[in-house]
Image (cartoon, rainbow, N blue to C red; front, top):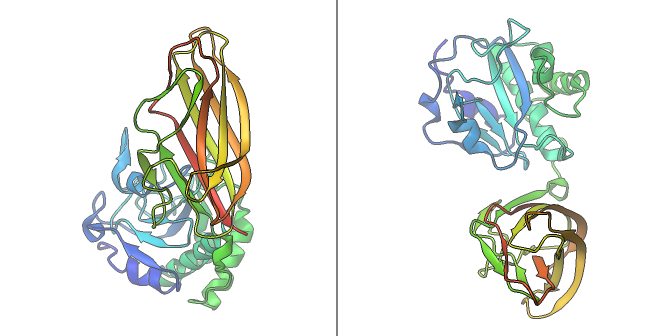
Length: 323
């Protein structure tokens, strides 16, 4: 079988937006020998197109022909063979006999309705293109005993939806923008000092997010363009404290211009270990709107100690849902 240069056209038949990743028509570990099945995956992360394209330590890319974004946008990565399923328990679902779809999800977050509908539609169009029954669409967890993806999906129900879509191709049945979260991943990127008796609003030097940018020019403010329900998950690392010293970590709401503190939407107290370090996961669920902004603050209440340091590896992920 030649290189599968028709994949972008097949994906467009779903009615969902399609992006062709540069160089995809000649990307692969050689041409795809045959297409006898489709394997559905989740990526176990966010904003990880580059991993699917380029690979990871010990496994060169491409890892799958298609990356399915949480918004329902379909990204065509490769036209050749990809390392997406080995070893396989099915002869129809080896790397040389099947296509892989990597769907953006951390393996815990509920599937957005638009992404799930695009998943069904895409599998249906691939079945039509390569003359496959819906029964040949299998989850990674069904053909590799070491895998759990795609998480939480009943694959029998999934295949029933695919089969129904093969009879009604090109129809978007459940794309509602308000159900699709915008996922923002932020990285501190540089060490930042928290003065004794003072506080720091963590400045985000690195951001992976949908367009447009989700934080202000000062780097500390997370902004939204409407009324949003936010689920935040941060990992904050601090060093330079006396053993047992307290620090507070808070997701804090300010006025939109950042001049007025409003409240701490989520706050916790952490204590330094014997080495003067804090490593704390700080989550929270709260609302934002166009009248406020969000900051992640670290408060160092003791005046008799040197400045603490928020380490550059501190990071956060915020999933924002329409309300």
